[in-house]
Length: 234
Ligand SMILES: [Zn+2]
Image 1 (spheres, rainbow, N blue to C red):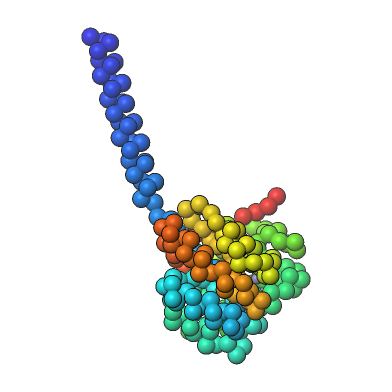
Image 2 (cartoon, helix red, strand yellow):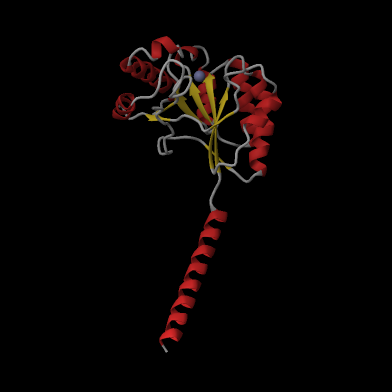
């Protein structure tokens, strides 16, 4: 009798485990795959305009991390970004490594200055930012003190987890960027650029969008509810 009872218990447990694993499988299959297209170093005349045209045609949103000193005379591009449903983020005033990473207060000031300029044009306060050259670069490695300072000022940090490499090498072929952009991560923040020299990024963009549409990804823009992305290097 005891043995039978044990058998009964183990069958019961087996069924529970089976049901659980089925549930997990279904959950994985249903999980939404998301890509955030991000463009740094704009606004920049024709290149940024061409990128906006492609995004409009493909009907996908993106995020633009703008350089404050570059905005003058290009208000229309910012208004287009806003009106066409994209996010605008901060990418400093100067994009100058030596200035930016000389002191935390300096870094913060450049971001707040860019925030002010963008607000004057669009009427909206941007609280999302990207570190020029990334949170960890040749001049600086991210420290908790700076993260705290930025958070105290209601700013959120977004690095990337996939890089087209169009920033490091803006003359590489479009096919290089298309190859480099490939990833199977469930959540991708893709680094691209829309600066004056990024003509080949324009050429690569339609294929990059197609690739991720075909893979079933949802295109989203970063806003201040998006989970931050940064890390520390020891
Ligand atoms: Zn940049």
